[in-house]
Amino acid sequence: MPSLPWRLLPLLLLQTTLQAAVIPVVTTEFPPFQSALPAPWGVALQAAQSVAAANGDRLDIRFLPWPRAYQIAETTPDVMIFCLARTAQRETRYGWIGQVAPNEVSLWRLRRRHDVQPATLEQARRWQLGVTAQDMKARYLLQHGFVYGDNLQESSDDLSNIRKLYAGRIDLLPFSNRSVLFYQTRLAGLDPAQLEPVLALPELSSPLYLAFSPGSNTGRSARYAATFSRLNRQGLLARLNRQWQLPHDDSNSANSGNYKP
Image (tube, rainbow, N blue to C red; front, top):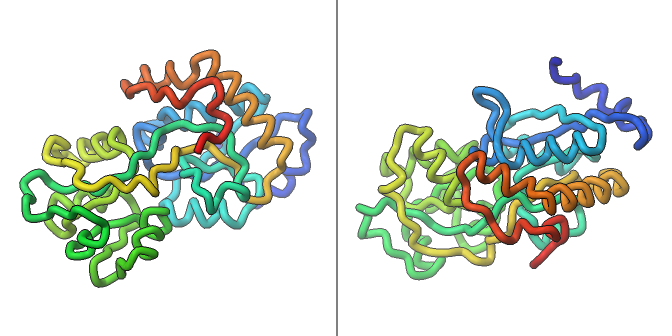
């Protein structure tokens, strides 16, 4: 079935909770958690589909550059987005469904770049860093003295930044999830064994979630969160992690529909 035109979104939102709904979703390429090719797949995407199906709904998923996906979520109620970091700034605005991935942010370098050795974030300002537009890591670095055109470069997606790192166009890459970094590096035909983390950024290490956008129906958000928790108790994420050969994160437990700071 073709994707439903988004101009029909207001009509969809008039449906009662007893009727099947088509839930608009925005996301970006972030394999192995979500990817559009060769057909939509991934841990987060399949978890979202399972939760929607358990509620009698289906998802209309759009893969977009992250800046566009995030802008739509910020300005359009009743849209699902993933994978979204659960930060203090977003906590009361989004309708959190459930945690689908860890998010341990570090600065990465190529192993051969022994000259790139920042011991602190302040020291990292000596080198060129690559970020994705509208990403929380970009905002964090800007707040900590980094400047576009000086020591910060912006791309529309993670894959572009990975290629920049291997080409020597940037020196350090802030990245959220080791599994995603290694997967995308291989996707680019590059060897992830050449990568190593050099500086952890624990302030940015907020877990990644399925979420509803600001202004969304609170009843639906609560219902989806409860469904996610129930399915996770039944082993949903453990099965998906095994399917895509990812380590199982113990924080994705029966209570993962609840926030754990």
